[in-house]
Image (cartoon, rainbow, N blue to C red; front, side):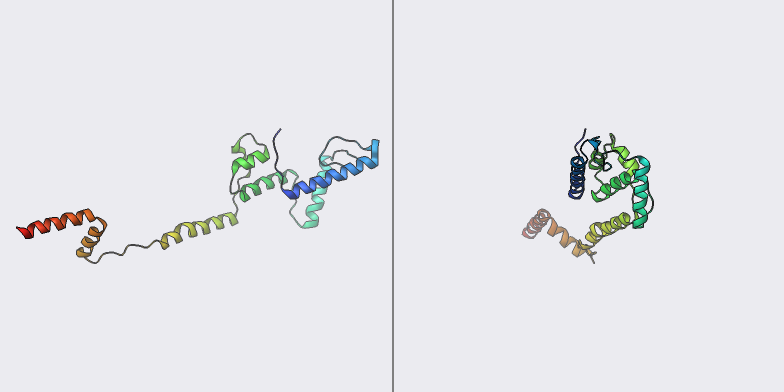
Length: 171
């Protein structure tokens, strides 16, 4: 047993299905075969694998999506959750029920060109452009300027030099 978190849309769809099943149970009474399923035929019977495949094929044909097998939906869901969740492998592992996080990374952690493009843009903005915003030190023209900057950055050295010069002028 594990805790499953559902998106509001999914939760509403499942609640609607549960309500539909309840109405069917009341209407069919003893003819309803209750197997305790989340999704079932009108009379409560479970769907067979070939029926699910037929309905999925019908859906993909109607929408122009590429044909897939039912398990592809799980794969797609996990891959999207990784992408949307910023690569949070442990959260996706909890949703998929895999015992090892390596299963999630090996099976579902695909990259796509859009993600790679966004990563490149992020590197440009967060690294290269921020580096360009940092004021670059101007090369010094001569040693007097270098000495002046060194003294500004190290006031203790400046005090020592001034004290030394004062001693020399007093002698």
